[in-house]
Length: 590
Image (cartoon, rainbow, N blue to C red):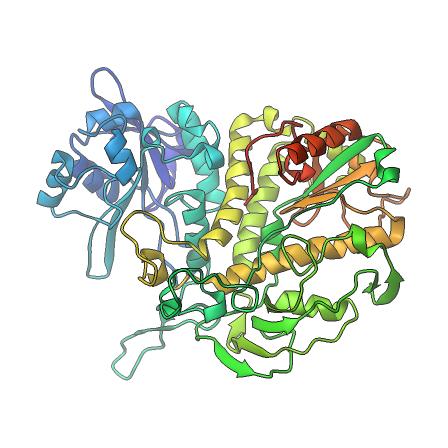
C-alpha cells in the first residue's frame, strides 16, 4: 500500500482519517482519496476483498465521540468508475432506485455472502453497511456511500456528487471531523449523532469476579423503544389501533406542535413603506434543542387534573384561548400591543385556539410568562428527564460556527460588518459552502427523524413500522424542540413590537418578514452606537439563535404576490418567497 502525502505519516489505527473516496482509472487501478490530500493505492480486486482491506490495512475510521460509545466505521465512497470496477452498476435502474437497493440475487451480494459478510436490512443501496457479527468484542463493519446512486441528496449536499474525488474527500472529511462520519442522509446522521454523543449504556464497575457488565448510562435514553402517549402518536401508530379507521383527531386528541406558517394582510401604513425585509434565524431548531428538558428512559405517566410544572417535560391538555395578545407581559412588564397583528404563539397557523388542546411544556410555560393562568385538564408527563440534546447542539453549533469562520463570517462581528461578510460568502469556498448547508440539514433532519413516519408500500395503519423500534423514535422530544423554536420566535417578535411598534407580516418556520423604510435588516432591527439592540429581540450575527438577512423585495412585489395567489384561491405567505422573489412550489423549510 503506497501513500503519497505527508498526511499519511500519522500513527495510530485511524492514521488515514475517517474516509476514502475510491476512483478507478482506465487500467482498473483504484486510488483512495483521503483527507488532507492523502492518496492511497487500493489493491483489492473485489468488493469482499475491499471490505477486508478497509478493516485490516487501510487504517481508516474515527475515534468514538464518547468514552462509552463506539468508534466510527470506515467510510468508503465509490465513484461511478469504482462501482464498475467492483462489479456494481454506475447507476441504479428505475426498479432498483424505487426499491432503494440492488436485488438480493445480485452477483456482488452473493460474493459478499460467500465471504461471510452480511448486509443490514436496507441492503446494498446508496448507503450500505457491510458487517460480520461481533466476535471477541471486535466490531467488523464498513460503510459504503455511492454518490451516483443518489447517496448525496442535492437538498442537503448541493453539488457534492459532481465533485472530483479529492474535492469530495475534502467536503465529506470536514463534515466527518466536525460533525461525524456520515452514515446515511444528513437526517440519519443527525439522529445517529445523538446516540454517538450520549450512548445508552456504559461498562459497570468490576463485579466480584473482576468482570464488567453493560449497564444503563444516567442521562441517556433507554436501549428499548418507548411507546408515546396517545396524544403524541402520529396517525396510524399502534397505540391508536382502537380508533375507527377514518377518524380525524382534533387538537383535544392530538399534539400539534409544528413550526410557524402564518401570514396576514398588510395595513395601509405598511403598504406605504417601500420594502419587505426577510430575516432568518440561524440553526433555529438547534438553538431550541439547547437547554431543552426532555423525557429520558421511562414511559410517560398519565395524570388527571395536574398542577402545571414548567420544569416537567410532557404534554398537557389545557385551554389557552383566554390569552389576549393585546395585553401581555413583555420582560415581566404589562404592555398593550396590536394583538390582531400578531400570530398566536399556541398554533402553527398563528390562529387563536378555540378551546382545550394538547401542548408541550414550553408552550404552556409561555402562556404563564405572558401573564395568564393555566389550568390543565390532564397530562402525560415524564419525571425522568434531562437535557439530552445539549451535547448534540454544541457539536453542531461548533461545526457551523467554525465552517462559517472559514468562509470569512466570524462570531462577534458588528451587525453591519456581519451583513457585508455574508454577501456571497459561499462563493469564497464553494466546498465549505456545501458543508455549511449539510450541517444545517443535519440539525433540521435530525429533529424531524425523531418522528419518522411510515414509508413504502404494504404498511397498514395500526401496524408498527421499522422506525418505531428505535429508542430515538421520540415525537415528544421533537414536539418540545419545535415548541421552543416557535416560542423563541414569538418572544423576540413581542419584544420588537413593544419597543418599536414593528409587527411581522409573515412567518415561515425560522424566517420572518417585516415592512421597512430601507432594504436592510438594520432598517428593521434598531441598533445604537454601542452596538446594542432591543433586549430579548432579534440580534444580527452568525451564532445559532441570531439572525441573518434572508432577502428583500419591494412592497409592490408583495402586493402583487398576495393578489396573484388570492386569485388562485391560495393563502400567500411572503416569507416563503422573500429570498428570491419567485413564487415557487410549496417549501415548508423543515
